[in-house]
Each structure stands twice: as C-alpha cells, then as structure tokens.
Length: 244
Image 1 (cartoon, one colour):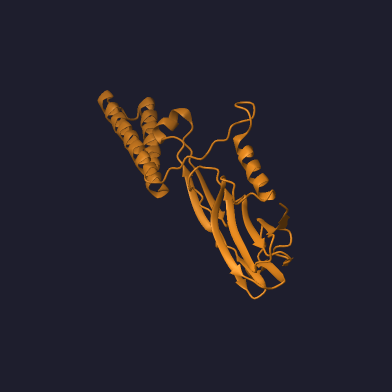
Image 2 (image 1 turned 60 degrees about the vertical axis):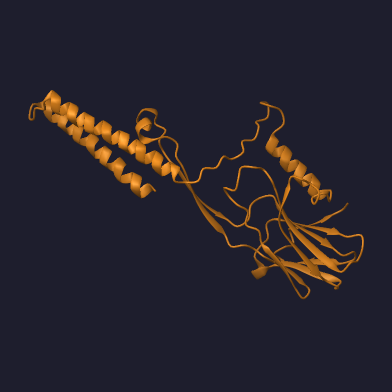
C-alpha cells in the first residue's frame, strides 16, 4: 500500500522544488518564464494533486474498516460504560455465574472423564499462563472435568479476533496448549495529502501487533467434588477457586 503511494508523494515534492527553482531563476533574470507557461506548470501541479487524492482514497478503501467501541467518559454521561461492563463480567465470574452471564462469550469447551483424585494443571512447554484459571468444585463426584473458555463481549467487531488455546487431558495432567501468536498491521488514514498541505494532519499511523490471547479471558474449570488441583511454575499464579 505504502509502496504505491510514496512515488506519488515524491514526484509532487520534486515538482515543488522545480517550481521554486524556476521562480528563483526568473527573479534573478537568468530565465524568463511567460505568464502562460507558469499557468501550465501550475495546472499540471493541480492535476497531480487531484490524482494523488484519488489514489489515496482508492488505497484506503481497499482495506477493511472497523469501528471500535468508544466508552463514555466519566462526567459526560454518568458511569464509564467500559468499566461497568468489565465489572459485571468479573462479578459474574467470582460469584460463579459466568455460565449464565449474557455478557460472557464462550470461545471453546471441553469435557473429560477423570476418575483420579489429583489433577495437575499446567501449560505445554511450561510457557507462563497470564490469564485466569477459575476452578469451581461441583456438588457431586461425577468423575468429569469440564473446561470452558470465556471472554467478555465489548463490541467493536472482530478487528482483533480472540485466539483461544487448546485443552487436553493426558493421564493425570490437564494441559493447556497456548496458541501461536497472530500478527496484525494497522494503517490509519488520517487525511489525504492534498488537504494535509493546509491542515498538517496527513500522517498515517502504522502499527504492528503480536497477539497471543487477549485481555479478560478466563479458563473456567468445573471439577468433581474432592478432586485436588496441583499447579507448576506455569500456572501457580493463575489458579483461583470459585465459591458459590
């Protein structure tokens, strides 16, 4: 995208330099330009500006546009909507209502038969797990371990789609295989080059993002009554127990 737009900009800058040089020569008397020739050069310059404007918006339209949610600002409409949504989400989690909470989005679920009395929860390759692993003990010993992966729904489309892990049971180990990172490049077209010459707001904001799994995601485990949960270095700071 930038490789197509840059030559246009460079050519326009070169033309500006030539116009300045021609004006300087005319002023010194070395070269005399007719009024008609000046208007011809000016017309070419304006045509190039209009062409660059068309190219700019053609390139901008080729991408995928997304509208991100804009939270309310405290003092300008009451409570901050973003904080309210997150507060309700975590209240539902720690009160054991996450499965019924409509603001939680289910990204994946697993169900395992497990008759053992101890279960080690860890990640593959001992990579640190930075999310929350919430553990709820069932009322009965039904010999089943249920796992569900949630995130909070904040709106704003799928600009950065969630990348959930995989969960599998191997012997007495519940292993979390963390996902490979997803790479995104964003390009924000602030204003076209023609208008930016007068407003100074034509810079594009280019960002690279490496996403493994986003914020506010929870691995929710429901375990049989009496099952003991063990952790290792990869999960010891992530496990929290839910009391209904």
